[in-house]
Amino acid sequence: MSPPAAVMPAPVEAHRFEHPSTFVQDAAPATKAGEKVDKWADFKFEHIRESTVSRAMTKRYFEDLDKYAESDVVIIGAGSCGLSAAYTLAKARPDLKIAIIEAGVAPGGGAWLGGQLFSAMIMRKPAQLFLEEIGVPYEEEDTYVVVKHAALFTSTLMSKVLTFPNVKLFNATTVEDLITRIDPATGKIRVAGVVTNWTLVSMHHDDQSCMDPNTINAPIIISTTGHDGPFGAFSVKRLLSMNAIEKLGGMRGLDMKLAEDAIVKGTREIVPGMVVGGMELSEVDGANRMGPTFGAMALSGVKAAEAVLEVYDERVKQNME
Image (tube, rainbow, N blue to C red; front, side, top):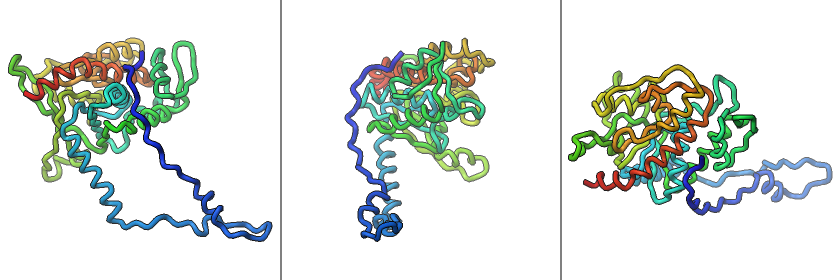
């Protein structure tokens, strides 16, 4: 199973950087044979004022806030499922503005380690096709493959996602609520965006003065916030509280063989305007926990992207009404 085919945007030519010891050594004066040369003696960074650094960061961030206030797709959660969805969408549709909202400072979710404190990442076949797509090497076993360190998968996928010019990651930012509309034809809720705030502010609403949030409009959302926890399963729990879905099934006990198939097959738009994937879906469907195997996370992200593309034009039309 592989992501939809699309032409990758032309890579931006990287600035050539010489190792400091090389350019310092080349500039060093001649010395007598046998004498050591201090390669770093004349090393010096270019001049900069502190305010320049501040302006360089804040200018770009606020430009991004302005640009992505109206997004085409918002992905909640930058774990393995959310990042896989972002990669698939950004590659298939470079014309879409894709905003990723991640509550943690470090994106990647639980995919930095394979399980417990063990580093290897296990993916059952045919998930190795996605590894091949993004260029992550693996060791092949009988019915599964092994990436030597989960961080290799996560960092490779993340670097590819963040390289796309149509993707912006807002990390240390959480989704506090959903923007909703009532469909005049059905009288049911349609999701039309997200309500955001700094994660640290969200965590302290009860013991500090309330700080109102910000918003991002989008015709469709992909929610991949994981199973129930401090920020987990947020979107589906919010939909339940609004009576947009009847009940939550609750994640079942660990069964890898049942869980991975169920998560990939079940990834879908659960209410108009919201696709749910990854372990958040287990809270809706009552699917089993899968534990330290990650193929379903990657392929659920691929399927989530495909689900978005199936309904995107219709949701855009509704969002303009």
